[in-house]
Length: 497
Ligand SMILES: [Zn+2]
Image 1 (cartoon, rainbow, N blue to C red):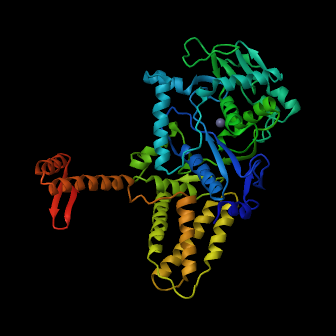
Image 2 (image 1 turned 135 degrees about the vertical axis):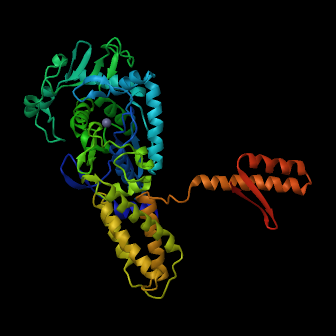
Image 3 (image 1 turned 120 degrees about the vertical axis):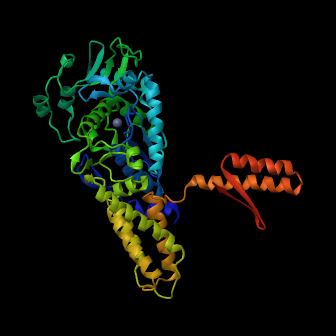
């Protein structure tokens, strides 16, 4: 299908649950066919875990589907490398600075190390890289500029070199809590005043700029003090820079609803005169055996531990595609509970579906069709258009798999046209939109094959030229690498010993 045609037929049918309106809304981009998507990325001070995998895979699904519909999507996902303090109340040490201190590293060494590992995990999970991946520390000027605007408009105040957002004043004109459903009066009476909060007028105020303590090494000059931006500033400043002051979709985990996203709204409203985006999307949380995930609970499993099976609560290793499929088997707004049993069931299901992609290639067509493949395809689009309902898509794909196996067993028949439709359905939904891939074929082995063929051709050429010194040298060098070449009538073959 032509991409533009797809937009025309689909654009009025995609519905997205908008957290801020608490209902499903028809997706109408501000400036079609362009779509701006901003998702809060990781704070890079430790290895990625399931709490990183779920938003990454959820918004990868959104990214892939919007592109499939023909939209031109600019996907921005940030890297938080400064300003995220240990607790959300603007107190405690910077998470990255703390890790750097404990490991005796430069903070940027910590950032680079864990960013690289995060990228590797995301590649393993077949999560497409975003279009832009900006870092907070690379956008200090933009953040200072935004703080300045908020000060100018009178919604922030300076206290001892730090700048705080005046939530109470904001709430007189706007509604602080409109996204998360919290009420300011409750917040003020429920929050306990932590040490150091005497800088703030009210406990619900949040830092836009923090003055650095003398020992703090991540610091930048500003009109107010040498310091660093508050955690919520970076997303407001960077989304506006790359997607404009009002863009289409802002996403993240539900844990970021408050105070992070609530504060982003307040900052943009004051600085730019409007809310930052049209649609807010939030993925739900992951539990492990019904329990919240947490370092202190001993059920905190990193992605690498899942892939290698190296954790006391894992019965075996689970491949990246098993994790991906498991996450997609639940709707992104539902909670998701990890257990060995559930993961093993997901693994089996995923393998069967991928096998279906292969079986399809060898199916023979008939004059009649028993099943309605058009309907099956419509069901899949309907499910995706209904707020990215991947579990319903998967249920329909399993019905497709049943048909494939029935045709393969000669119990049912499909016409050539339906067979093509079904092939298209499986390719499009399993590989392109759900982003699953076979883990059997390793791309490295393809590269190795190509390289070996090249080397053996060189050796063949040397032999043809009676340059036996070279052909023997190639053979001996390969043996040193553990690769044995066998010469036969049909040419040379190789194997790794
Ligand atoms: Zn953010």
